[in-house]
Amino acid sequence: MSTPVSQARVSQRGQTSLPAELRHRWGIEDGGEIAFVDLGDAALVLPGGMARAKAELKSVLTARYNAG
Image 1 (spheres, helix red, strand yellow):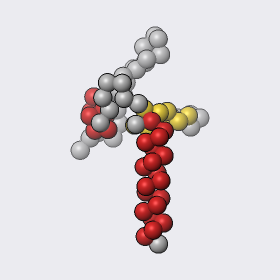
Image 2 (cartoon, rainbow, N blue to C red):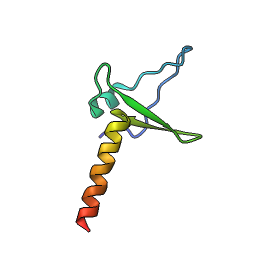
Image 3 (cartoon, one colour):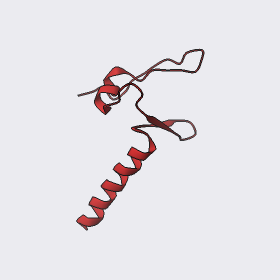
Image 4 (cartoon, rainbow, N blue to C red):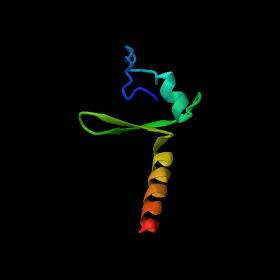
């Protein structure tokens, strides 16, 4: 089981790296996409970008709707 909290530092250029454990778990390879949603005082990280997040959400909502 993965650790629920991961940390990274931000460079002078504003860059950071995604921890390897998360990249492997989410299947993100070199050039892979992630999206950030600004929640004000926090950020939501979406592996696969917005398109993948929307598709996953649609799938979950459709399954729950069909289940009744």
